[in-house]
Amino acid sequence: MLSESELQVLQEKANLIRQDIIRMLAIAGSGHTAGPLGMADIFALLYFHTLKHNPRDPFWEGRDRLVLSNGHICPVQYATMARSGYFDVAELSTLRKFGSRLQGHPHREFLPGIETSSGPLGSGLSQALGMALSTRMDGENTHKFIYCCMGDGELNEGQVWEAALCAGKEKCNNLIGIIDRNDIQIDGHTQDVMPMDSLKKKWRSFKWHVQEVDGHNFQEVDNAIELAKSINDKPSMIIAITVPGKGVSEIEKDYKWHGKPPSKEEAERFLEELQHNFDFLKS
Amino acid sequence: MINKNLKLNTKLFDKDVEQIALRNGFGDGLLEVAKTNENIVGLCADLLESTRMHLFAREFPNRFIEVGITEQHMASCAAGLATMGKVPFISSYAMFNPGRNWEQIRTTVCYNNVPVKIVGSHAGISVGPDGGTHQAIEDIAIMRVVPNIEVIVPCDALEAHKATIAIAESGKPSYLRLAREKTPIVTTKETPFEIGKAQILYESNNPDVAIIAIGPMVHQALLSAKILEDQGVGTMVINSATVKPLDEETILKVAKRVKGVITAETHQVAGGLGGAVAELLSQKLPTKMAFVGVQDKFGQSGTGAELMKQYGLDVVDIVNSAQKIVG
Image 1 (cartoon, rainbow over the protein chains, first blue to last red):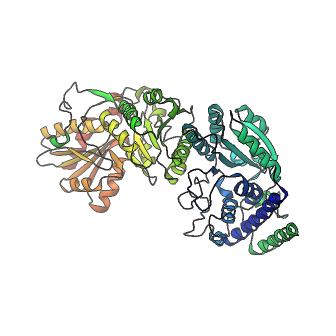
Image 2 (cartoon, rainbow over the protein chains, first blue to last red):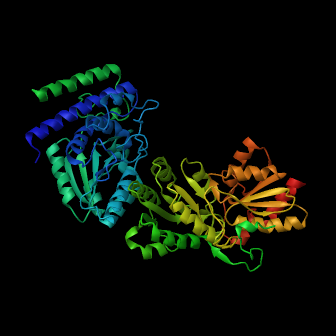
């Protein structure tokens, strides 16, 4: 169980991350907004509670691995990394700029702490599985966990299901996938673009342990991760139901915010709302 | 005459020259290097024996993953293993690996810059009866344009063996191109091999043309050299087993001494070895060139010999190209 104070910290961190996301996207003038905001709670939980990692030593061998498969939501990862001490928060303003370590889609060679370069969808789960298989070969799969965050639109990609098959076959117990089930992709609602019905059944039939949680409920997500870690004969998938654009009422649930940044004026309005909520949390 | 320093097969011009499939050299090379390098792992897409990875898989079952017919997944899964310090070899037919999984190789292997070893067997048109769908003749082009990767095309099974060991230790993404059919043995165990080094195998007293060849075309080039010499045309034959990084120094040195350069490969003439040599020479030493390879066509069913003739990959095609240059 997360304590009251832990919950309070996570909520504050998630709020600050959302503010960072709005700021950095407004400065960049391009990028994705809804997805990063929707995953801010889960990223806060991962970096401030779940992951075994050391921001001062990103290459520490004993760390868990986090693969971001849907690379376009990287602003949430950059902001969370900055807030947890990988680099200065001020660097977030370089997002997508020439010479920046914060590439439009994350590049492993540019920024320590990024495990894999990503952007082209569908390949993260395969890479995470490769990492899990490596830990198994080295006898480290009982204490080192490999997490893979994916989008729900991304599940259209055939490669995801190739990886799903392989992980199920190999019974990779330390592989934990998290699907951002926000029901939107670039061209519209996932239900209209390419329906992905019966997600739980799909993954179960591929021999995965499957849970569905409210992606904005820290306690629920944490419980699911802890349960996933204890499953020893299957990979685990956590389907996190999220609200795209969460935290900014104008963006929430509007798929048009999938792939565009806020203007300067919009950013001011959104930051005001987030700051108001932050002050409320503090009070 | 033959370059004695390279200790080539003394019987290479004989009618009954020993022939072994390139893939066999890979299979035993992988087994050998895996015994000393514990980081080597293998992944195969349901073509285990066909690609000769079964020798490794049998000896090291815990370091082998059968991924089924999932070439795209195989490439990325290997990339994940490589980020953890493993040296994964991934094998299938060249048509699917690197054909089917090109983007995964580009992004998750080469952009990530991790040492995954892509082994494409059954490349070229000599897969024969299987027909055009299975004849990978574009693979060198699609691999060579991607940054960070080295592209190796061995000329015989012994060189494939050495190349397998060399790429296992190179620390980079690599593409190793193999063929299914038996290929004449040109080299010996003693012949040196180094990534990035081309070798002058044959040299007439007064060379008029240089034939730069790769893979099974190296033997064809040597046979052509003999015929050309009888016709009064002096030649040099170069094995450019590393297509990328190209051995610019050797190729420029050779090109300076001849009237023209011929490239020979079992690949489309666009984008392969010929393209690579042309890119070099056109910039640094404009030289008359001829390209022996497949001329923008798909293959079809037939025996290896029938197809080599049909698609202009025969000894006679090299000879005619040389005559045109000197003529």
